[in-house]
Length: 393
Image (tube, rainbow, N blue to C red; front, side):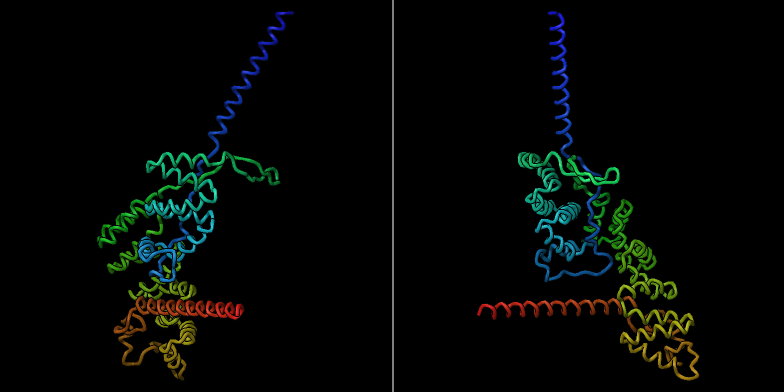
């Protein structure tokens, strides 16, 4: 009987010991599982400038002119960054993380910390974790540890299970700020452009492109354009156009047109026209005319004339005269031979090229629209202020 009691007692002790070890292991597992690093990248492509020419905007209040220029130098749109900054200050999580990653790529740690602090103030685990990591790297271990202590052990997880939505608790998923592959080379290339070492800059932009920073294609194309390397510039703008940069279609079309490849240029000019460059109707018409496709030429001359192009209107009048053959009718007989050999805009060697004339037209239109918006905003604010004054009289 005594022996049986001893055996029972020993079994109880063993069972308790096993439970204790199991609980310790479970507690340890819970602690290690409080954060889990996700491989999901943080998107910064939303800030890309594309192929459009940008200048600092005095109406942007939350970025200095110097900050705007730095962004433009890196093919980043200051207007998009400004909008995201406003959202980040109001606590938008995705804006905070995207901006933090953007400035992390630019090696501006002060800006990264400032933006992450918006997320820390809101209690976002990703912002807390990434700020803690940066502080630890800078040697501020005490502050980093304080932040790490704020991280929750688990977070609410919603998943689909057997055709129904189930919610529960799971590890906190963290997207960590990482320097993009190729970012070092890209930043080096930007510095070389500032130093006017363009050939060396192109090499580093190509390294960045090959490492995965595809927006480097625009920088390579622009340098080649500046250096009058038309074939190389067209090649890199085509890469940009193929990945969806609408402005690149205009550049490719303009350069091909000016180099005499009007038929090859036309698909790009048509895409650029559809994207809003209405002044391209005239060169599109001329490309059809030179190909002796009179029906399409007339159609596009009419579109150009409706858009206010006087040359298109005059050409239509000549084409629609009785006994007009439609061949080389965009010029007088004395100019006919000259037109055949010409590859510049409107068939006149003394006029500006398509690239220059159309770009200036687009810039002027954009500037006029921007000034109109500013005036409308002023009128709205003034009207609102007048209403407030009359209300409190």
